[in-house]
Image (tube, rainbow, N blue to C red; front, side, top):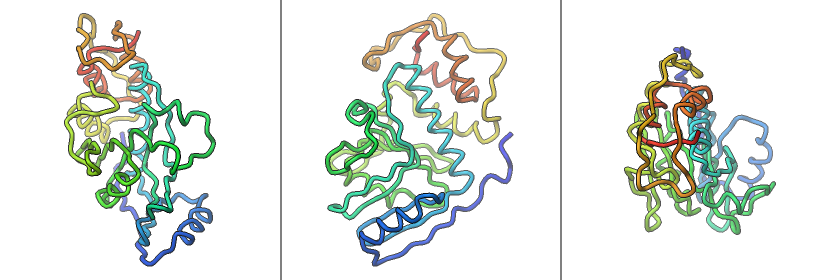
Length: 250
């Protein structure tokens, strides 16, 4: 079971009047520390992530990677890479981020230039005690098209529209994934062992492929896929998610 002492408060410090040069120097000096720095036009927040934050960050990262693999969608994960632009006066590090539509453009690059390279296609934000709502303006300025946000209770998807984020009932990156099933998956994760594999898999045979299929994905027998996914990501709720997808690779 998940450790009952997991929810510990995140620690954070907020500073004002910080120059871009100071922010860059702190990034360099603190690069080997487990800290998250968010810079917004002279204001700097330094946060020490809680165990709960790190648990859901890892869980969501594995979740996205597993779904992408099973749906044959190419992705390029960059974790908590710092995205900073001096011309915008903004810099921050997501819990997780993924290049999907633009993965070919950044794959293999050891360094990214935020003024030239596209932003991540999908950002994951875990908000246990500090709100990423203050960070969303920075993501919008950077042009991140989609944010998945989880606060320990509610999972939401936001899409960038006219330089502002709007709540969405579907994902741009994974349009056939049912948002409600992601919420149930995350809720169940709090009381289920991380890599539990239930003995009796559900029967996916006979399901039909939805007309709004992700480009390049073909339907197949999904019984084997369900076993592989739970071994990687855990939790029976993920099977229900695949039922909502109604297709997976063999």
